[in-house]
Image (cartoon, rainbow, N blue to C red; front, side, top):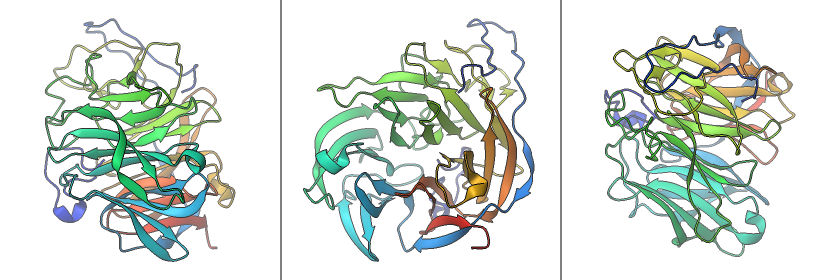
Length: 386
């Protein structure tokens, strides 16, 4: 999430908080010095006024996620220090408090939450957080019969990954169109991936992972490798794609669009050999997998830490129909772009609306966009001028 560089950001900023099968890719043999030529990426083409923002709720402690649970129209909010709150009818209740079990600081804490697609019946949900040692944990939890409070004792512990640094922990959890639970993990921190974890197919760091939680003993599989710090990914079920925002090092923030193909080997997003479409000086070797170039990127003159978003599927804001919406934590800028049939993207526009300290872009029960600010506010997109 959060700040991509190794330079510290103030505590007020969360202490560093932060495709199509015809897609043009290039694959070079491992160890080669040949530099593939990247295709054109979407660049900003001006501004739009597609929507305004309406405050939904405020006063949260560094929220990192907001959304809804299947079968429940209430708003659920996750706070980085270790709480999950449920907001219904203007009343908020603490559904879960794990502050004694979560390490908070830099890019650690409560980082990802996913409700089971059948939550209305089985009351199961999944949590990604940093334990007291700062290591990654993914657990399965269960809510009470009413679905309003979460029992703190895990039903299952699904994943434990040691984290060598305090940053680049990744963040999101989400169920994919194939029914599996997906997790994005960063490369373990430090400048330019000093452990070369992202390109190592035998390590879980720097990867997009998936597990079938319907199994008694789920096994995590690598879906994508070559990630630096994926701060939010989202699926477009209509096309079977995943959109991933990967936080950059010194120069480039990038958006990736990848077609999910379970029968194909994991694809490679390029880090730490490439930052966006730029070759990293001194890097001459990358791991396996078809190289996938980003579909959009922006430089650090426009922002410094990307926050991934969603392909809009609501109905109220017509100017956003089928557009991918994402933003930047540091500047609060929000951009939208349009995916093309060829698996690329075009028409990238900055929006007039801004959200300072943007940590998450989600959706409510009607598919309308929610924007989360680490400053404590949750906002909803409404039609421009409305």
